[in-house]
Image (spheres, rainbow, N blue to C red):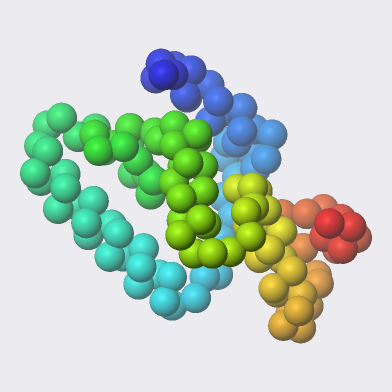
Length: 129
């Protein structure tokens, strides 16, 4: 188990290396996904009411039953279970990002737009993967 300080350190390092602590990125997502996220948020709000003061709200999409940061290995474990039940090829968590890019390319989305969405410095990087 990670301590709260260790988790914050990992997240801060990730943000600095990948986006910057003060940099925000807006990504357009389909309406059906927004609807799912809204339902998920509603379930979390209902759960928070049941748990009461034990729930430490950190405004996370994926969290434990008490609102804390989810252990990455637990997220991967759940993903592997979903992959197995879905009868799709076994993939790593990061492969979802590559699959997303491949689907966008195959549907004819402009490579510059895809590159920006993925946060790549230029489209050449997107095409290399």
